[in-house]
Image 1 (cartoon, rainbow, N blue to C red):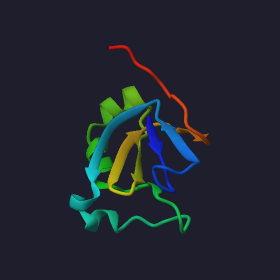
Image 2: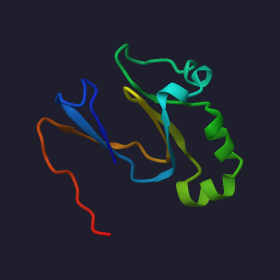
Image 3: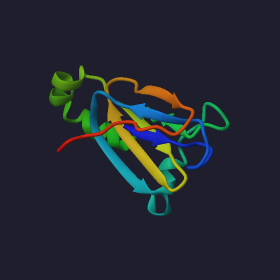
Image 4: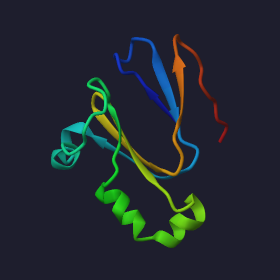
Length: 113
């Protein structure tokens, strides 16, 4: 689950983005991200910071393990990219995320470990 604050950490609304069937996740500090790769992304909306990267090299790597992807993820993965202020989050998932708007301070989830 991700908390996304497009207007800044202290402003609302914020959004909870939850992926149910994620095969992989990685988070990159924007200052060391390979800009050449991310510069190929095209925005659908001028203010959007989220993308589905159709032909990413990371997605192609997973396509080589087709048997595993077929069995566990129905043969179809999509590469989701969330560009934050300082962080880039990437998720390979077989289903679209659930997105919930948060309009004020709240407790989201607690986990006992």
